[in-house]
Length: 190
Length: 206
Image 1 (cartoon, helix red, strand yellow):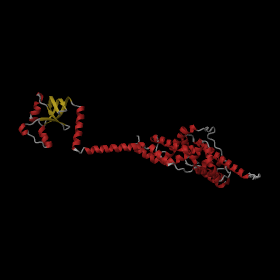
Image 2 (cartoon, one colour; image 1 turned 60 degrees about the horizontal axis):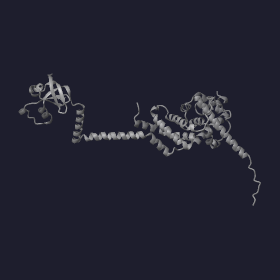
Image 3 (cartoon, helix red, strand yellow; image 1 turned 45 degrees about the vertical axis):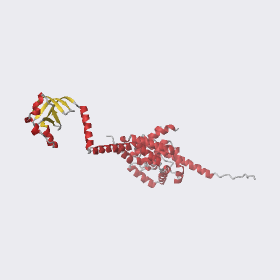
Image 4 (cartoon, helix red, strand yellow; image 1 turned 180 degrees about the vertical axis):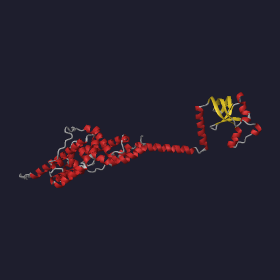
């Protein structure tokens, strides 16, 4: 039975609108501050349009993130020059044998914003959905419309890439510090 | 018992709390004993925390919130306005019916409508024969002159409506035989709704 306008609107206000902040945070990571507002607005328009099909027994936040992702793909991603990630070994996970390397909290924090931007968007989205939004693998699989195995491998690769990017930056920094600045030998002519 | 190799394979699932309870317990037991794996877990958790910090908690611009609200709820406003107007009109309509002249106008309008729908046609009407003047005296206190002028038979149908019986050969008894008053009768004939009258072509006393 179709919901009355008022009931629908009240439900939307109670169940969907509280997630605007979280969606905006993800949209910023996908499209930057300028594109984020458009994505969020479009996401909510779509959500409102199809709100009657949303099963209130399920997770509204996950449903909205799925719409956000589809909106991003259909409207924004096309306009960006990004090669699709290759997932020929979709469900493989590389064990963390190299993970005892001590990278300090500050070192992670310093380079993380840039490192995140360097990730392919599907990896970035997977890691943000898991670490920031704290969705379960099953929910991420539903949002990203892929098998759980793919979620796990994307997370694994995303974290490894972030680790390597930050590690590389750290090594660069160490190398810079190690190289002494050459003394200025030439004298200024008066 | 979980070893380093196995733990490193499930490290993501462990920090994401996606391991089964049994596997998580085994992982905890190994981490408690193995400092290298403990460092690996800590390092991965630091990375996850750094991701959270980098994403931050950006405030959505107020304009965006307003824009989303207004673009998803115009129907709500419209519906509320329409419902409010409809409710006001219905209430106003009900209230004006307490004014006699308005009621008269409404009744006339309804009459007009009923006459448009059905004016004259052949019918068979069933009802009770009554004296028009006596009935009006009973209902409205009209001063009937029947003792002087004699009764005048009309037909009252079950909807309470009074039909004047037009003079004619077939209708003489119905109009003027006062002994028939109070009897139920079925009349065949033609109605003239505008005049509230029926022309009798035949009848049966029931």
